[in-house]
Length: 224
Image 1 (cartoon, rainbow, N blue to C red):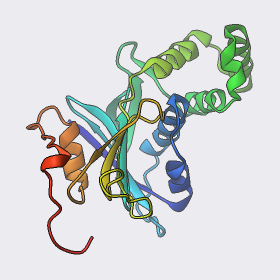
Image 2 (tube, one colour):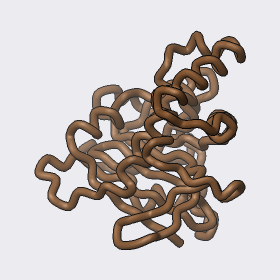
Image 3 (cartoon, helix red, strand yellow):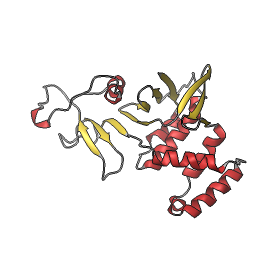
Image 4 (cartoon, rainbow, N blue to C red):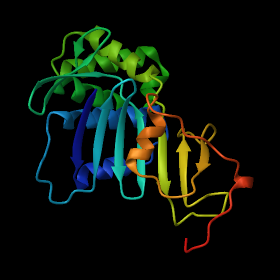
């Protein structure tokens, strides 16, 4: 089991707070996060949250902030090389993900979506970008792009949403599953969910959690 924890400063928290509307958003956030793996900051004065990479039978990355926790699949492997120093690699090919490669991939996925409409345009842009970064092995880049684009990301978010609370239609505490509006669905919660509970429902090595019908749930007395 591997567990890596990193603090978020205000600047990185702004990236994390951007709405995730599609696969490209999760990929870009993942790539930006990978840059933090070997750049831990112990004395962040304006800490806004934290990131946890958890690799066991499940492999996930968690983003923890006030009133929100979300998670998606972590598609790479980590090998400790020293204190706070890790090799990030693809376990199928043993290909190492360097900082140079991360910067190159970010520049590709940040590009206007029109390049993704044509394989020819995409390949031309990848070749031009690789030349800019003085990276010669186009096959490596292409394999990583395919891996990232086709991964099942398993996005799930816990929210405490006092602004939009609307009874059982939009409960104060809830889970949002999937990111696109057509496929997303919501599960209401009876109370606040802690990070340890959020992780537990995603961990296949622990006992299952259970859903109950909203018709059988009665809100206990008290202030909400």
